[in-house]
Image (cartoon, rainbow, N blue to C red; front, side):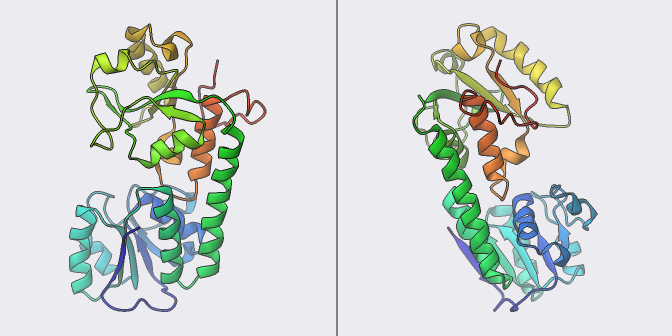
Length: 284
């Protein structure tokens, strides 16, 4: 896990915190620091209290002027280019910045620990990281003896782009008792050909919901799209699922909820009494 403090030592207990990423916002709230948050990215929408917080630009385009005007004593952000660029004027203004690189489960645990150190709540952070890990381990234990289900996870249908091996989503697939049908590639989310899809023998297809349409509407669109691949086991068996993305695709405190959502789709027989209400379309 890569992280860095900028602009000197962070105060023992920051009183004004800004988060520039939805998953980081969820972590800060989970550590009981919601009252100290004075700004979040506009895409931060969970927990409910987040909606009342001032918005500091989007995840991809932080508003540095608004951030500086809010006079934070700690800004928590990620390490990709747009956040690096946003961090520079903040550092020049004397604002403490904690930059975190989070692209795997282990990096999530480390990020939580680092935020705990920066906010003087080490014990809570260690407990939160342990709780997430233990919950994921429990899911893994339940699915470990089941036969692996071949999974195709689609992040974009046209043109087709899918989840690759070197991603935390692939970690979710593994924990949930699945096997990614995509061979190792240099890209985290590679584009794939129609031929590759047709020969994948995917037994379950998962699509991350996108945009403002309801999941039910997106499911209907997905069913029509995948009908052209009638020979795929997932299509034959009507195991094409559109799932709510934020719970699954944010590396944060709700990661076990997302993994459980996927596990129930792949192995409904194991979780027969634990159907998730957040999944509009359960195994048929």
